[in-house]
Every structure is written in structure tokens, then in C-alpha cells.
Image: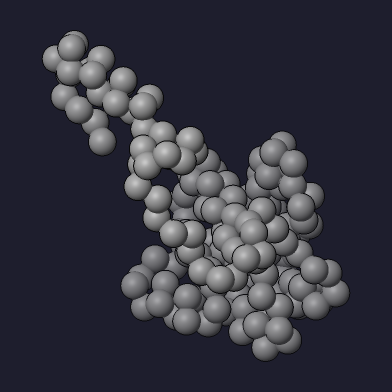
Amino acid sequence: MRLLVIEDEDRLSGILKSKLGDIGFTVDIAGSAGDASAALELINYDAAILDLGLPDGDGLAVLTATRQIGKGLPILILTARDAVEDRVAGLNAGADDYLTKPFAIAELIARIKALLRRPGGVLGSDDRRGPRPFITPGAGDPRTDDAPIRAYRAKSRARGEALRD
Ligand code: CA
């Protein structure tokens, strides 16, 4: 899976490349809005991480241009801008997720994986008929058997622990 990290801080993009590389992603780095737009037009990335404060322009312009040329890849905005109106502007411009700096790398990775699991995402199904129907736990489907949960609860109760749902 190939990701594009659009980030002008070399130290941060280096960390992201290394951490995401550790879990199997191929990571390209674009340090400017111009490089990012060129890369996104040329290569079909599975997802992109987008900083908003870039030396030659605003990340939002990159986002808008990318959507305008019909690229639907998941894009996560990673920025220090944490005002509600910034988040709303980012999501309205076509971002799929928004994370503010400082951030935990574990959360960033979890969010990227979640985006890739969505229908149409590289780890998701291409079934666009909508969400799977809810199956009542224990209704005969082995995948939803809640016996382990019941056993855990019984054990917790025996130990007098509070139940954690
Ligand atoms: Ca920046």
C-alpha cells in the first residue's frame, strides 16, 4: 500500500515515513503543495496525509484540486490548526479525517487503517450496497457468538469486579 505524506517539516515526515514503513506501507513524501499536486495527479495512492501550512500554499487548495480531478483516495488532514472552523473547512473541502498536532503516532496509524478499511478503501470491500445488516449476537452466527463475553462477565462477577462494557 502506498501513501503520500504531504508535510514540509523534514523531521516529522521522516518519523512518519519510518513508522508507517515499519507496518508495511510504502511512503512517498511531498514537501510542498506543488510537489503534492504533481504526485497526486501522477500516482494512484491508497491514502494521503495532508499538512495545511505548506511553504508554497495552503493544503486545502491541494485537497480541492485533488477532488476536482476526480481522485477519491482517503485524505487525512494533519495540522496544528485546531479551531472548529478549520476542521469544518477541511472536511467540507473533501478530507475524510482530521487530526491535530501534537498527535500520537498510534492514533494516526489507527485512523489511516480505519480509512483504508472503508468500502472502496484498499482494505475494505468494494460492496457499496450499504452497511451489513445487524446480526443479533448469539442468533446462530458463529462470528457473533458472545459466549466468550458472557464467560468473561461471569468471571468478573465472581471476582466482584465492576463490569466494563
Ligand atoms: Ca507545515
